[in-house]
Image (cartoon, rainbow, N blue to C red; front, top):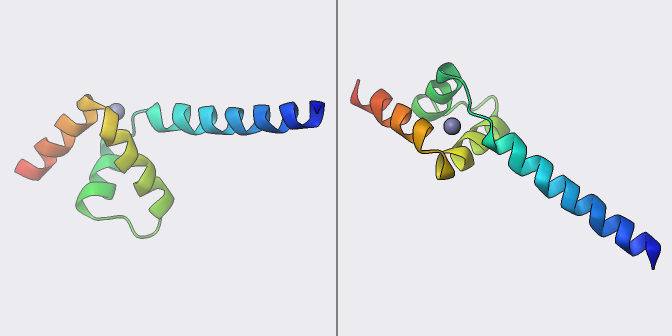
Length: 69
Ligand SMILES: [Zn+2]
C-alpha cells in the first residue's frame, strides 16, 4: 500500500516539474528559432515553446511581432 502512494507521488512530482519547466519564458532567440524556422534539430524544445505559448500571452505577443516583420 505504501509503495503505491510513493509511486503516485513520484508521478505527480514529474507532472509538476514539466509544468514548471514549460512556464519559464524562452528567450526571444529561442522563440524566433522555433516559430519562424521550425527548429528541426530540437523538436522537444519546439514542443515546449508551443505549449508555453498556449498560456503565456507575453510570448504570444512577441511571436505575432515576429510574424509582422
Ligand atoms: Zn512566456
